[in-house]
Length: 468
Image 1 (cartoon, rainbow, N blue to C red):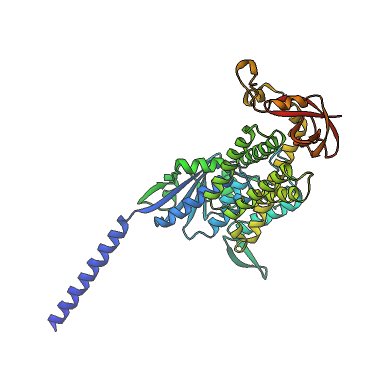
Image 2 (cartoon, rainbow, N blue to C red; image 1 turned 90 degrees about the vertical axis):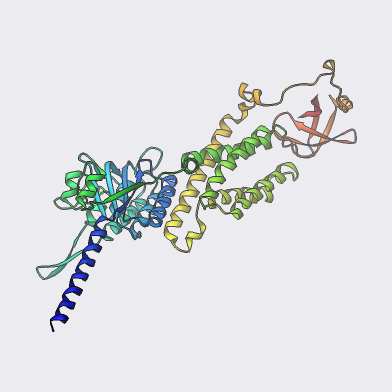
């Protein structure tokens, strides 16, 4: 009997020691905190970096994903993607608002599980504005933004309580307050009157449930969250990732599109120069390459763009008149540029977000086309006479007295003779003079087939004509 009691006592002591050792080991285990800096304008580049950071944090089995934020906002489509990823993320997400969380930054912050703010920081002012003069967009955009803000706040849930026989939800983050950050027509009792867009200071955000506490640093945040033993891993983008993020900036993309279109247009207007085509090729490379690396542009989308360029070349250089090939080519170029900016696979999984991205891509590229056409019609006629163009164009004349001899000197005999246009001069084409079919270039404008012309000069192996 005594021996049995001793065995039981020894077994109890052994189990106690094992549990104590395990508890001590667990207490020594460091929690991994993965920190992501969000200090730039929110857009495709910052969304791309966050995707990489979220994936890396999950791979490294991080315990907390912390966003160190200071932003005035940015693109709504990118912000929607970021807040959706945060809401669906399996790891607890914290945000430290280190001064500003305006507009899209407020949306992303509200998506996080815990919000901490530095004294003097602000959150709110989420009205959707255009990117040119900062004016508020039409109400349908504000309606969509209000819905996103409301849904994001509701995602954090609340407690159902009975008040005077009615069930009322006491939200952790009041959806009405989130909406008031978008629309100045909304009033929230004891918070804000109508006619003012809501923005919280740190103390106001704490009072109304949109901030857990004040904090001066990330270390203070972790201390308040009772995270004592931890290690912080910072997201560090590579040089290539920084370059890609820079190239997918919407403003730079618009500039590249204008250079691409302009290069093709100037090359068709002045065939043989070469420099505009080189500019167009470089712009196309800088436009498509980051989109390919980002996984947005598929090869078939680029093939559509290339086919469109080929059809335009056929239209301008081979087939007279602007007909079916030119129209189809222009449409294919536009579609290729638009679809390359959108993840088409995402339409099956997140159609609303993808359609918004598609509309933004259509808008951005349409504006680029319109701006280029305005510039081309305003300054295009004088561009070829500028000193800058003369420095890059090939104007050197190989004269006989300098030792250059042409095998086509007989073409000089056509100077002063009249003929007819055999194929449209746009500005290059074919003419018929004295029964001979010759290549020629119109000195100014376009000369349609059948019109009478006169050969005015012969330069660098090429006849130049004017309409009679």
